[in-house]
Amino acid sequence: MLLQRARALLFPSDLAVDLGTANTLVYVPGQGVVVNEPSIVAVHSSDRSVLAVGAEAKAMLGRTPGTIELIRPLRHGVIADYDTTETMLHHFIRRAHGARTLVHPRVVISVPSGITQVERRAVQESATQAGASKVYLVPEPVAAALGAGLPITEPGANVVVDVGGGTTEIAVISLSGIVYSTSLRVGGDDMNDAIALSVRKSHGLLIGERRAEEIKITLGSAYPQADEGAPVPVKGRDLTSGLPKTIVVTGAEVRDALREPVTAIVEAVRTCLEQTPPELAADIVDKGITLTGGGALLAGLDRLLNRETQLPIMVSDDPLTCAVRGAGKVLDDPVFLARVAFAP
Image 1 (cartoon, helix red, strand yellow):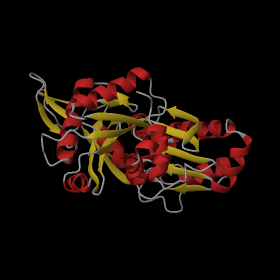
Image 2 (image 1 turned 180 degrees about the horizontal axis):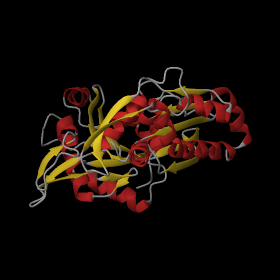
Image 3 (image 1 turned 30 degrees about the vertical axis):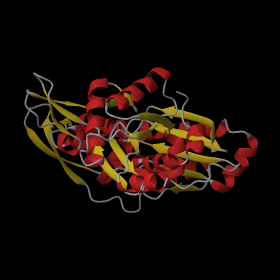
């Protein structure tokens, strides 16, 4: 027994994975988050050979010749391209284990709570083909709540709003189970698209996905800020002349562009609260709502939710890694894992 524990410490094999639309994160017990890379794969157009994965592939966005194709294998939190997802997972698992080929880990993967049985099977098969010996799927809001340090095993409501790249997960959790949840297929990618569309309509300028994301990070907000930040120059292609052009975008413009996806998230939160049983609703008045996921970093989102719900809103520590850290916590507790994981 002691030998097995020593081997586990020296050669850890189990992994937790947050398989996200925008980013994939891998957690190794005892080491923490060892992989945090964009969910993008670059392949050669002719023979489909893999040229780059993750950050290296993302650096190619908008700059590739016709011989290179960039693939985002996940859409709205579920697999859209099975083969590419398998390739990407295999790459990240090997990186997490230092390229050791004989390691076949148990893998816990956080997935949207609204995932269908067919979509669950696709994730499981993809991870198995990528080298996993056993695959467990855990609802993302449960993993995010664990990662945020919420006492979900106790009786009492814990409300989590996990805003990811492709989905927003909203759930009321009590006694390790989901009392009510909704999986809204709106997230950070939709915010990027909204910004690109606004710049196109208002300024007649065509910008790429990566530039739209940079604008969101720099100027994006869901609620008026005391310090809006200085307007930023944006470079792109003029739709009229077809020539490169530079315009200036303000924080107010970006906030207006984000109104539709942000409103959809707020309305989904309100609906979730309306469906909560009265006893748990009383708990929420005291505990409030916890924001996780990359979208939790959008300036003013907590203030907007506070205004709309009149409840305390907390942004978790390191919201980007909450889900994968929470998935990692269940690896060492097989009984708890059996309680929260989706049935095979």
